[in-house]
Length: 95
Image (cartoon, rainbow, N blue to C red; front, side, top):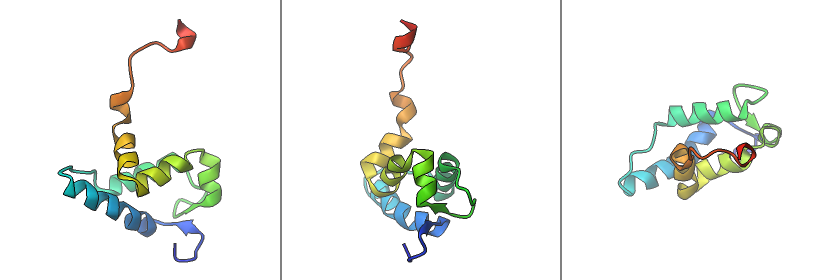
């Protein structure tokens, strides 16, 4: 966005704004943007802490999750509720 070849906090805010607005219109209370931004930067661990590059997204292996969080309301809520879907069942390797 903006022809810079990277995602900054401002870019993330732009995309999250649509998800946030849709969440509010659906009667949900989404997390504040700063929390989402911190989580995304932590998930990616970019080479430069000020922005995220395509190389960062590829290297972290979570680019698809990041795109879903920022562009798809269902992807966002699936990510936000991922711990609720986790089970206490043992791994197959433990059986």
